[in-house]
Length: 188
Length: 87
Image (cartoon, rainbow over all chains, first blue to last red; front, side, top):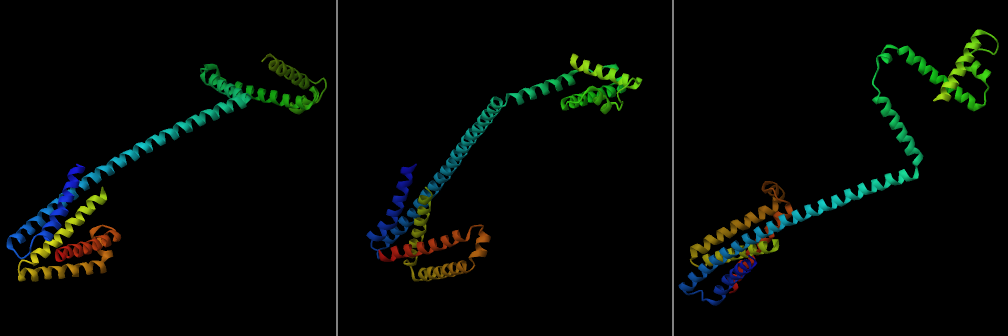
């Protein structure tokens, strides 16, 4: 294709210059030859131009394809590098902070266990019991907080139940509940 | 390759103007006809330079491309007629 292109281009130039330079313009036959050669030269030049244009368009398409493939490869490499970086970061986090990882795992396990439990009829029928359980858990939590502060039993009972120390039945009931909560907590 | 096809079209234009000169050399009437044609081409060329912005919008090409076409057309005319007259 390139040879054909070169030959057409060269012949167009030769057919353009040679008859005009070599042939005498006064003779009719020479004029006719010049006209024919000029027409042939135009045909050769236009044909060569068309071939070269087709080649140029094909080359542009090939370049676009190459650029697209290169961009795909670069994108894939960048994606894999990003993923591997994320993985390394996660591994580093796991190594550096095992306590947090353990807490997260435990929290997830607890959530899953809670969710997987079927809802029993008792749970549906006794919402008040759940409310009291929540109250108990809050009381237990409050007891732990006050114990951590160094408070004694009588002061805790006064704080939570609002009952002063003595032989009153209210205090005894509060004391009994306090002991029960402490024991339950110890049992768990 | 783009330069090759542009070069070939440029040579084709030059040869076309040489052919025009050859036609003009055949007969005095043909000479006048070619002169009229060249005058028309010159007027069109000048108008294209003056109306380059509106013409570029009409042809949907850039102004730079239009100016390049006009300059190359002038170059074809000069080279083609110059080759014909000097040989």
